[in-house]
Length: 453
Image 1 (cartoon, rainbow, N blue to C red):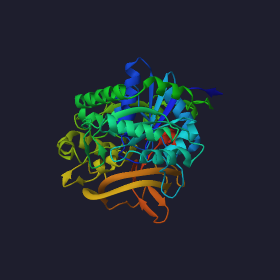
Image 2 (cartoon, rainbow, N blue to C red; image 1 turned 135 degrees about the vertical axis):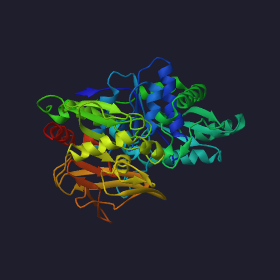
Image 3 (spheres, one colour; image 1 turned 180 degrees about the vertical axis):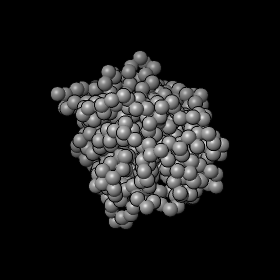
Image 4 (cartoon, helix red, strand yellow; image 1 turned 120 degrees about the horizontal axis):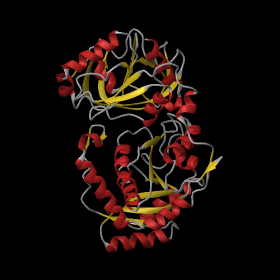
């Protein structure tokens, strides 16, 4: 089986070159022309897909060859792109930067090759002229399996500067598909973990995405970019399907699985809720900042990542919900918490009372913990049987003391092995962000426990 979806990968020589502005703007520009645009992001990033979703009206999805394995990149892409006219994939870091010590694995170049997709290279031209040709030539020729189909020049100062850049790039043999002038940055504020998520900015985020779309429409050759996207070859294989991944739903009445959302808990992969639903759960979203009760009939709770440290006072002030979460955990009901969810289950966060499910304290620090992790379940839990291997990603500036309970969640392998997280009764809490599509059995196991707890 094969499918052909016109597609582009937006990459750059390094972070900070303008990938997000160009990719999001390109999505918005194509959508404004009436195209159904499928948005994707290389890597584990949760924030950029929120802006992609605003630009396209579709769920932003991640393509991560480390978390999910290279074999799932194509199927997950086809799953997200079903029914779309064109797909835009935003890269991560520099084009050839992947998982540390793993060669090309999980790099933008790796994903572009897996998708057989042409690459558009976004180059920050603010401090160069003729040298841009050497830079582009190097990136275009480094790996003959990566097809750099065009360049978008960013932060160009003047007509003369543009002329010099174009003259130089004629020698590199890579066409210029867009030129964006050096203008004040589109209003996309950042803080300690990157861009401020869409859910926290609402109207301001809508205006920012519209501005990106206008900038790209004005400065880029959309027809040429669409033509390049159409040159991508067909992908073999079938689209990923949550129902097939879990084999069959759990028998019996659908248990209610409450999934935390709202501004404090914005980090989640769409496939998580799709797998829970396919496994037989009635998935209901709630907002810990505003809802004082868990959804009626809650049999299980999933609390993903986000920024509880930013909203610690509001989360703490919602005492009725904190007590409801603690009572649910005491009952033995399944609770899966990742990173922000871990902090919320602690006794306190930066001195403010949290749910008190875990006898641990959390606080902000100046130190960033970041990177992929190769993990193994230390013992049995509501998510995984002992020995289950999953790959995860850590991204936080907090610490939890102690870092693990009497029964840790994961043993992290590598040069500095460690155990981390907490398993107690029905609770599985950890710093690791995981992509359940890589191990769909965890969704079915969780729903089974919700039915029997």
